[in-house]
Amino acid sequence: MKRGAALILCLLCACQAQTTREWQTLTVQSGALDLSLHESGEVVSQSETSLRIPFDGKMTQLLPEGTVVKKNQVIARMDTSSQQTELDNARFSWDEARFDQDLAALNRQIRIEQTQNTQEQARFKARLEELKLLKLKTERDPVALTRVREGLKALAQRQEILSLEARERKRLFELGYLSREERDQAQLQLEESQKEQKRLEAELLVLQQGPRPQEIQKQKVQLEKARAAIKLADREGKVQVRVAEVMKRSAESRIKTYHNRMNYYQDLIRRGQLTAPLPGTLVYGKMRVGQDMIPVKAGDSVKEGIEAVRLVDLQQPLIRLTLNEIDAPQVQLGQKVKVSLDAWPELVLKGEVTRLLPIARQTLSNDALEIQGITCEIRLEKPDPHLRPGMTAQVDIQIQAMKGVLTVPTQALQQSKSESFVWVLEAGKAQKRKIKTGKSDALNTLVREGLKAGDTVILNPPPSGRGDSDA
Image 1 (spheres, rainbow, N blue to C red):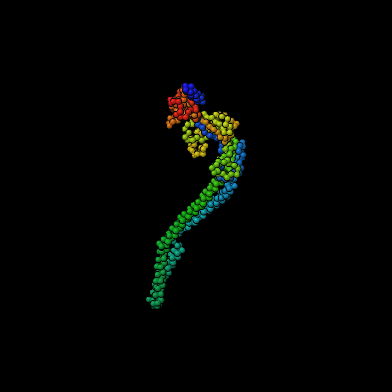
Image 2: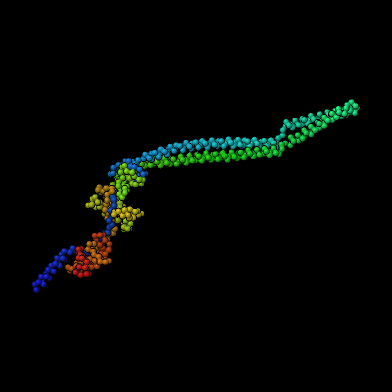
C-alpha cells in the first residue's frame, strides 16, 4: 500500500516537472519601447508636376508611361477640332463686328454733318424771319411814299389852278358871259380834287405809321417757329448722334466679346497640347470608371480637371500617405520613419515626416471606407534604385520612444473584466498577478505597476484561473 502511494506521488511530481519544462518564460527587464503608427502610402517625388486635362474631350495621343521626357517636350494631345470650329466662328464674328464698327463710325459722322446742315438751315431761316420783323418795325415803302407825296403835290398845283379858274368863272358869270352850269363846273372839279387830297393824306399817314399790329404779330409767330425749328434740329441731331454712338459702342462691345472668345479658344487649343514644364519620368494619372480607378490612356474620353500625367524626379523620392484624422494628432514633423516596399519586403529605408497638410479631405481608407484624412509626406534619407513612382510602401512612424521602462510581450497578457494580469513563475509555480498597463506597440506592452525587473513571466500562460495560486 505504501509502495503504491509513493508511486502515485512520484508520477504527479514527474507530471508537474514536465509541465514546468513546457512553459515558455521571459525575464522582465528594463528596456526601450518604441511606439509607432503603421500606414500604407505611395512612392512619389519631392519634385513632381501634375498636368491636368484642360477641357472635356478625347485624348488622341499619349507617350508611354515611364518615358523620360525633356522640358517642353509634347506629352499628350487632345482632340481640338470642336475648339477650332468655335475659334473660326469667333474670328468671323469678330471681323463682322469690326466692319459694323467702321460702318457705325461712318454713320455717326454722316449724322453729325446732317445735323450741322439742318441746324444751319434752321438758324438761317430764323435770321431771315428776324430781318423781316425788323423791316416791318423800322422800314417804310419809299415808292408808295413818293407816289403819295407826288400825288399831293400835283393835287396842290391843280387845286391852285382850279381855285383861280373858279374865281374867274364866277366873275365871268356875274358879267353874264357864262352860264350857271359853266360857273359850277370848275367848283365841282375843285371839290373833287380836295376829296382826293384827303384820301392821299390819309394814305400817307398810314404809310408813315408802318404796318398794322396784326402783321407784326404774324411775323413774330413766324420768327418763334423758326427759333423752335433750331431747337428741334438740335435735339434731333443729338438723338441721331447718340444712336450712332450706341451702335458704335455696341460694335466695340461685340469686338471685345469675340476677341475674348478667340483668345479663350486659342488658349484651349494651345493647352490641348500637353507639354512638359520640366524634365522627369512620365507617370499616368488615374480616372474613376464606376468604382475603379484606372490609368488614363490614349483614346479615352476624359473630363476637364482630372490628372492626365505626372512628371516625377526619381532622384528626390517621397512617400505620400493619408492619415486618419483620429491618428493624425500623434504625428509630428521630424518624427522618424521606417519604410518597406511591397515589391521589395526585405528592403527597409529610413526617413522622417517633412510635411503635414493643414486641412483634412474626404478620402478612402485602405479598407475602402470613407474617412476624413490628412495628407502626410515622408522624405527618405537616401534614394534607392528600387523605388518607382506609384509603388505601395508600408510605413511605420515612430510616435514615441520610451527608455528604461518595463515591458512584457503582449501575448502574455490576459484580461478579466476590466483588469489585466500575467502569470509569473515563482519557486517553480505559476502565480497569477494583477498589473497596470500602458501603451503598446502591438508586440510589447508597457507595465506601470505589478512587475519588477527580474520577474519571470510565462509567455504561454495556463487558462485563466488554473494556476497554482493568485498573487
